[in-house]
Image (tube, rainbow, N blue to C red; front, side, top):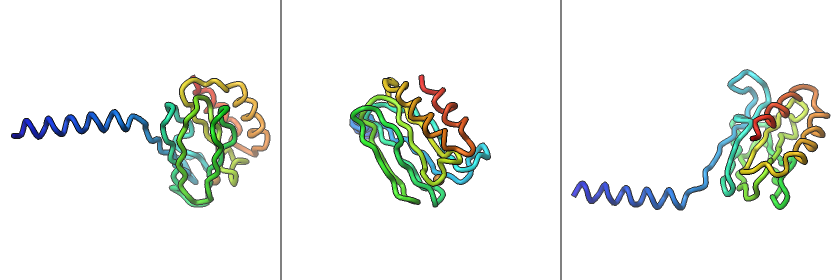
Length: 148
Ligand SMILES: [Cu+2]
């Protein structure tokens, strides 16, 4: 009997794995990160696969999440201040996002989905974002350097 039950559990777990192949990546919006940096997304760089979801969690209030550059065919998003926002990444490429309240302090992040087809365009968009920063401008370059 126990063998039958564990067999059933195993089969249903297998089905679940196949149907739930997409991963949910959680990114926290924080006043202070684990590394002591202020106004950060954590983790600031995520490598995802097509069809995954990204959940931006308002762990600290007073932040939002807005796309700044997305691959061709992908949808832009705009989260409300102090609210979680979940997106599905359906197109391969590099996504840049920011908290528009603290982007001047370097509150930005990068998501890579599959192949970084639009890397050149993303870098050009990143330059525009960092041009307006009072501090933390090195963050964007560091996050983009993780795109492989
Ligand atoms: Cu913010």
